[in-house]
Image (cartoon, rainbow, N blue to C red; front, side, top):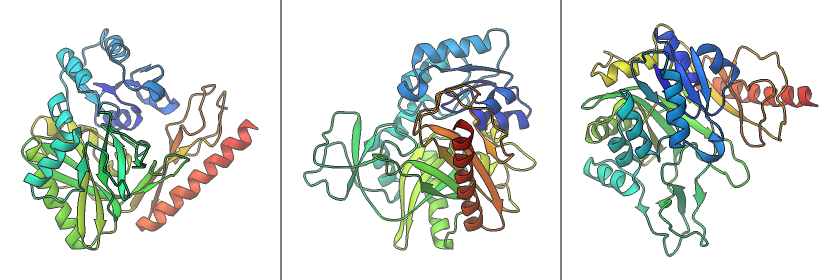
Length: 367
């Protein structure tokens, strides 16, 4: 199976567990991605320039040429590239949402209209900068990972690349869901946290599951997913990002592809990648998987430039390990750390301690 994403490791590892031979193209070429893949191609300048048609299509052609892939799964990086999804779908069977679905999900006004039609609370949204931007956020169309979210200061103007959304208070909670085009099954809820950096207040930091939710909030989010998923004809793995407050929930956006929380929802005896493929073929599991412990993952970001990444004795609880000798720029993802514990708060705290340990380890190794 072809896999193309900004980072393909989580999808590739789950694909391998599900009995597939992953052929991976991504931005990083991390050690563990290359190790789990049957073949790998690194997409040049991906972090700086995103998914570029000629680069992506060439990489997939190279991976597919000596083999007969059953199809392709596209992860993060295509939210603002429906035209590229169209080109990919012309060559291989696309397991996931098609370009039309992705375009509708990531068009702010269309999504707002679907939320309104489905009686799902959603923040006020505008393509034009409000006359008084106080209390509004500026977001990039098709943006992911929180880096693109900024306060809507007066100097910002609408130029077609951005839109504006009224800021609402609440705890960020994401629902990971499987859909078959007409039905949806919520696999679980995760609480999100940010890892702020200069100019990037909302940069994604990590997630822990299960999220601590009142029954009413959980029921409201499940009901919202059940309304929105068929209205948008979603298939496969998707995530729905909510803000949860005492007065109710607000659905911020749908991420119409496998997302950042796959690792913490990978069952001990199954594969979320295999579930994704089955859902795209119209088959949903009877129930969501159950987990004995809380699980957390956190992104570790480089605190300085590393010209040539050193060889490390990586702990078992790390993933997305940079290739030895590769360059890592300040602010780029360094690796992912995982933690399990009896409760969600303990798992999150352990993941954050482990992230600090990695920064200390890499600093000492590169000194």
